[in-house]
Length: 202
Ligand SMILES: C[S@@+](CC[C@H](N)C(=O)[O-])C[C@H]1O[C@@H](n2cnc3c(N)ncnc32)[C@H](O)[C@@H]1O
Image (cartoon, rainbow, N blue to C red):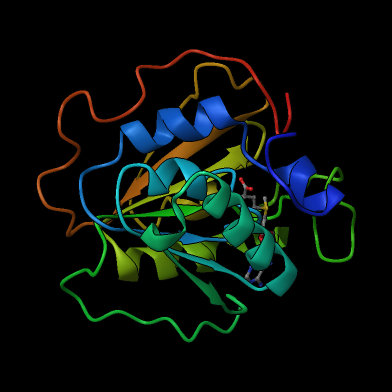
């Protein structure tokens, strides 16, 4: 991710550009909220298609994200918020403020380096089931980037779960969750056709 600036850990976790662009192209039209935006591997792709509210707890990463967006003339499309999503100040009334919510948690348990992944969603940072539940309060559709080996079972009670392989991603995929109240399901062709190879770098 050499075209992004940021701390080495954040860069090692950043979503490869091709996968981020593939994801952004398949989201429904409208504003997007991104939780765990880091230095902006996904934010940049989302901002190219419309307004974004992007949240992370790390102020330095948010500052780097802002600089990365500015380099591409996209800074005015994104509102960056600093928030610990384990205790979110974000709450939405039903009616949905956003067309979609994109989540990209840290796959390592607390206190471990980013390369030490867990397959247990509850151990990721922030814990993924609670993060997805928050996402479904904000938008009818939630997409979460996860290692392929992560166990999705804890998400089944939250909504319909569908895997969206990223074409060049070998080690991760996206899971799409749609709450029971999602209007009309996904429009045909909106989501990934499938395939695959790349990384949380490669
Ligand atoms: C995988 S990285 C995000 C990568 C980013 N999507 C990209 O492509 O550049 C995970 C992010 O989650 C953030 N994070 C971890 N725990 C958090 C929490 N409790 N609240 C908010 N953000 C958190 C970290 O600061 C980190 O930037």
